[in-house]
Structures are given as structure tokens and as C-alpha cells.
Length: 497
Image (tube, rainbow, N blue to C red; front, side, top):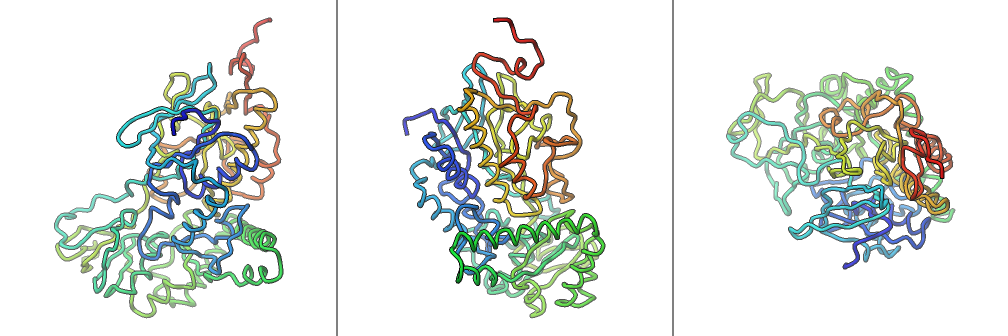
């Protein structure tokens, strides 16, 4: 652990970080690397969240790595199974010795003269510095130490427990309790049916409805293929079937939103009836303006039909001693209130960036290919799709990092930097109307109007762009040690030798 310089530093030991290390080992053999993980265990989201029923809201044939088949029977997997999959991957590829746990990245400073990042980390209450030639950010998209909880009037009056799912107490016993879960996103829709096993009753309290799609937890197609085909081939076919289906549905929501909306609502009506769907499951927005919620085997619907759970659509006026008073005048009694009210989004783990002594404000910069950021050299950052599984883009971004690093070596370059000359910001980093997204967009880079400054939400298209597209596109500037960025970008003349 005395070494302080590495070819590559990877920040985060979740799905993205462990996958990135494998891609680096495969495509850039011999490169020294280290994974910096601020927590004490790998797994990221799948180790952090421990609330009842924690599971994926994507199928594991697309949320899994592109190099390691998902072999379990359940495609909609629970948190511990996903954590085991990540740990197994790290073990298989010998990654564990290259992870530093308890290392929180605070800041990263790029120096063009030495073509190195100096990364300030905190470990055990002490700060230290590491250096690297390339920085790969896999720190996720939200704060791990806290979620988003609105200010609720009368919060201190409530005599029961209030818990945010991100900070779920270990071994918390909710047996026999009346539970109110505030929220209507994936977390709330996971918690509600899961908690009916012990709770007296669980109520999902939402301000507005969300689209809900039921899907079998077990993928019979995938499990059937594995009986006749080699594991990797069966996995690849299932993966592409699911990707193409996701893309088809998403495209339909863009070109025929009303038709898709009616189809989704019809499926829910078949489960719950007209009255419940009209009141609690008919959103005011079009499908995929916010994320669709996937429920395995209709578990939420079954809990509602069994009267173990219920849905209330209303606004909160205040907390009371016994529960929550709604603006309609109704009061929901509760022993436990779960605030599934969203995440606190942040860019690259909140790391402070400096380039040649100048602090960078991410919101002043532009996204490049969904993988890099304008004016930030030798740094890639992973941010998954909003309409498909996170790991699809995570894999592509890590492959792209390896491609750029190899190009640097082959051509004797020391730096790769996206330069947005004359390109103006055109839209937010994410085109998503969810409140937790809109609250945070000022912390993220923006998008331009045209490629390569836009973030596509199309995996098939990104494969050609990232894996097979040419690197030298006039926007990504490559520099050798004796050159300046302005010279190679054509902003100033090169001095005569």
C-alpha cells in the first residue's frame, strides 16, 4: 500500500468499478490500477441498501456484465444475489488485492506539465495524495451518506419511527406495525409488498401516480436456452432480446405515447380494476418521461388485492403524533413512516475537479459521448441509461476508456481532452421530469445540440459510437508531451522548431 502512482485509478467498487477493472485487465494488460472505495465493502448500491425486498428493477441479463453470464434462475434478482455476483467477478479476476477500502476521494487536480492527476483522498481521518495517468469515475450518481427527505411540518411530533430506505437499520423489526411508505418510485414499490410479510398493514402514500409494469421474476426463455446452448451464447442471445425489446418499447413511448399509455393502464386494470387504476395508477405524464416501475410477478398488485397493502394518493399537510395528516383532511395512522422520497444526486461522487490550477464547475461544461466531460483531460465517468440497465453503458464506457488509453500509448500521446470550441449548451444532462433529477441538474454537465455532445439513450447506437467509432473526431483532442492543448486544438499557431 506504499505505492502512490498508478496508470489508472478507478473510483468506486460497485458494479461499474469492478466491471471497469476487468475490462482494463482484458484490454490494457500490464497497466497498474487501484480501486478506491469509500465504504468498507464492495458492491456499491447492492451492499449499501439493506431495506426489505431490495432487488433490481432491471433484468440481470442486461444489468449483468457483458463478459460474465448471469446464471441464476431469477432474472429480477434480490440485492444479496447481485452482491454475490459482483464479489464472484472480483474473485475470478484477482481484483480484490487492488481495492483500497475506506478511501474517500475528495478532490482531483490535473497538471498538464506532468500529464498526471493528483487525487486527494481521506482514509482513517487522514488525507493523502495519489497520482495517476487516467481517472475513471465509477462512484454512482447519488450521495451514499444520505438520501433526499423533504422537510415535513410536525416531524418531531410523530411518536413512531421515521426511516429512509438508504439508512435502513440493521435487524429492524417492523412486525405488527402499521407502516406508511411515502413515495411512488421503485424503492416504494419494492418495500410495500415486501413488508406485508410482518407488518399489520402497509400503505403507499404518493403525491401522484407512476406507471407500473409487471414482469415474471424468472425468465423462462433464458433458462430454457441454457439447457441447449453454451452459457455465454445463451446469455448473449437473452441479453440482446431484452435490449431490443427495451428499445422498441421506449421508441413507441416517443412516437405513440398515448397508445403505450393506454396499453400500460389496460394491463394494470386487468389486475386492479378501473376505479383503483383511475385514482392511483394513472399518471399525468407520458411513459418514460419518468422511469417506469417494474414489479416482479405482480407482487404489489397481489398485496393490494389481498388487502395487506393499500395506496393513497394525496398531499401531506403535516406529521402528527399518530401519523400523517393529509390535505384532504384524512389522517393515516402509523407506527413507522418510511420516507422513500428519492436520492440526493451528485456528479462523480461530488469530487472537486481542478485543471491546471483552475477549479471546474461541472455545470459550465458539456458531456462528451456520455463518457467524458469537456475540458477535463484523461477522465471518464460512468452514468448509465435512464431507459435501460445501468451496466449496458457502464461496460461501454469502460471499453471506451481502454480504447483511448491504448491510443495514447500507441501514438505517444499523454493527454486526451474533449474541447467544445463554439459549442453551446442546449439541454440538461438528463431529460427526465422526476423531482429528484430536476433538483440536481445544476450539479451536472450539460448537453450540446449535436453529437458528440449529446447523451444518446440508445445502446445499439452507442455500441457503434463507442466501440467502433473513430477516436479522432475533431472534438477529442490528443496531445503529446511537448505540445499545448491550444496548439493541437488549432487555437494558437505552433511555434517553428
